[in-house]
Image (cartoon, rainbow, N blue to C red; front, side, top):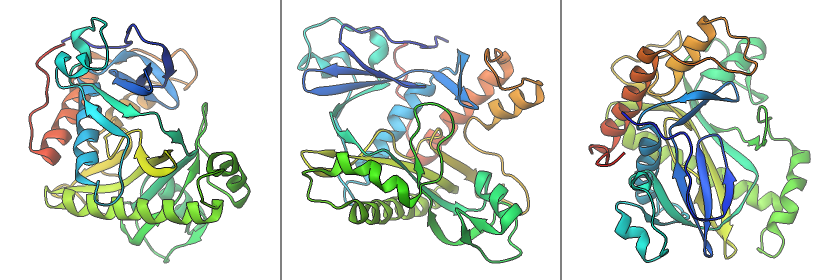
Amino acid sequence: MSVLLKSDLPFPLYRQGKVRDVYTLNDKLLIVCTDRISAFDLVLPCGIPEKGKVLNQISSFWFDKTTFIIPNHVIETIDSLDTISSYSTSELPDYVVGRSMIVANATSIPVECVVRGYLSGSAWAEYSKKGTVNNMKMPAGMRESEMLPEPLFTPTTKEDEGHDLPWTDEDIYKLEPIIKGTGWSALNLMKELEKKSLQLYSFARDFAKSKNIIIADTKFEFGFVNNKLVLIDEALTPDSSRFWSVEQYEVGHSQPSFDKQLVRDWLTASGWNKEPPAPILTTDVIEATSQKYKEIYQLITGRKLNNSVY
């Protein structure tokens, strides 16, 4: 099966992230989700088949579902080459179908809006040492993967390289150039980001629970389009969220996840020192990870992945 590691389109490259290639399309943006995969802040030399399609199509699903909470940046998803013909006269490759969307060119707010519903990952690591999550005191005696008393908003900075860092009061000054002319104060904007993030998580958590899926935590990104606050980037994907099976859930240890946990575990067991270059994954790990991504998409959406091309 083909893997897309890098797109090559006849438009100006606006930004290349770890997974997404973003192009300028007139006054809009074209986002192409590749099959690249990152771990420990490095992009691996191999890709995961159909991963980009899962990310694009599950984001599209959640964007559609959550417009009653907040509008988003999506203008149109690329379901066929005909979709994009009204935006461009250029001949485009088939691989953009199913893994791309046209979005508004939003002004991004540099905050990773993390919401945690369960004690896992870095939250568990902090709690184990200090009894806190994001420096907030938690009840004593909690166990790994236990549901928190209520979902927590634990924002971080958005770093171009390296790890994101817990958001501090000093970081609020980073918002000043972004909010100028929007009518927002930095403090009120952060309160609104918290409110919308918790609403989005709560809705998605309940929806996923009806599909026997637990959303342990997730992250959102927001921006401004014509001074209007909107949801941007991706939404509730296996790259931005921790999905667990209700049937397999058991408090007291880490949970099997529908994401790239298999990749992280293999890399850790391989003895890799987490410095470049990253090793190439085995065929078994690549295939199993691809299956995990496709499985969570189908469980949540009830749809088959659009993989008619590439």
